[in-house]
Image (tube, rainbow, N blue to C red; front, side, top):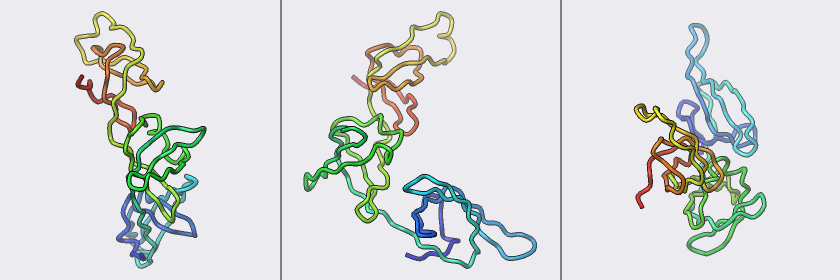
Length: 188
């Protein structure tokens, strides 16, 4: 669907120069002399390359809408992750690089939203939080309990995070899947 570049928003996926791009930043510029333009930073959906492009305000660009579907995570196989369609039970393989950092928080049976363009998976959206078990946590340092200080800990998936002083090995915690930060202690 063609839209005016003035209607473009951060997070939109657009087709430009024969490739798919996600709009990362954009600024509407009105110089004192000459016509207004949009300065946009685009990131390649498939390869991650960046492009800074200047569009005239009157120009149009092709906006791409992705198909979204819920899939259940099954297991990892080499560099691929296996997901199952919850309606047809069909299994698909997705490269870990498509999901990126949040892939370390995938758990058996987790429901994930996969985004497709022409039957190719472009990205995945995990639940915002996941429950993990603390495998190893440093002991409390005497005298640091008065302030809200954090200590390093290792999760059952091998990921290192910072947790409050009262968290110990064996406890279950809720972790933000986008940045790996501690959210709260999980209810038992």
